[in-house]
Length: 443
Image (cartoon, rainbow, N blue to C red):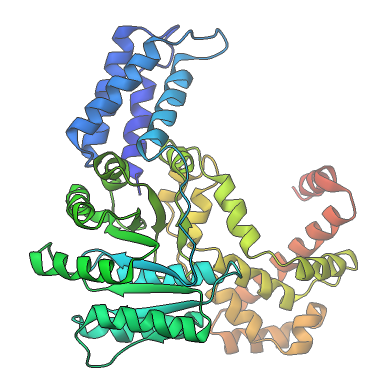
């Protein structure tokens, strides 16, 4: 996402490199390129013009300190305005009522059903909500089955009324059941169409009126650009929804919807989704997204993802094992599982400052750990606990069992040994100094 925009903005800022101060001439040249970059990203022309006019006004009004280069000052101004364009501040989902009722709306193919599952999983993980998913799409044959599969996958019940074509009745009955069963969160998935039509709008408006949801979220396929923004406006005119969800941000999207939608409907983007995994959902933070667009990474989100998978008791046990030099392949396998739960590996790496552009040229498969996992799972329990017994014959057997070459097994064992030594070194208090000495000695 935003790759082309990021590249174009970077080139635009290069116009200011080497300049001693910000002037009307060099600002005008830079912002002409910025405006073109925004238009190429499918941002509405009026929004792009207003944006660059605001940046120009602020840039020319700045007293540039001697220690600050004009390019750096311009990046700071553009960053702040990008964040403001996308909403300025994070807006939380409205959770109140017993049960809290959330209505999910959008066109067919926007990712409503998948997002409904992701949202249920996300709120369930907060340990405060017992969700009930409601299959309110009575037209798409696979929608009910899809929601059932997602519900089973995340351990959340799904309310259905097989054969019913009345989404209002289905939604109302589901809320009654949630109250009876003590479930305090109801997420209603609704039907979509390939395009906005009067029948669709009347139906979703009727459901909205009947259940009076505490939160109405409009799901947008971010790959459709300005079309998505126009559709959002039509839905908002009828539903007055509370927030927007941008899906498919891992696809070939130019980012125009994310940059334009707040200005058009004056409603915040609340969530973003990428990929099919149920964990692939994030609260939308305008300032962090501005960081990503400008190639600054997003360390805060990366740390938050890590903390979500962090178990204090498990960490304490692991720390003890490292201190006693007892870290084994079972622990290694557990760590891999936790990393995989954090999301797409390429996206995670792109959150590290300076890595975003580099990662575009590298293809990281989500199954990158598959070979490693196969090797470890081909070991006996004794071999996992005590890798020192992995002699030549054992390694050959493991290679055959995992479908790998013996060189791959040897490489993993060697990497494991090095990792184990480094972890022990850090735990012993030798810290980075000891680690650097070891690395230099290995040259």
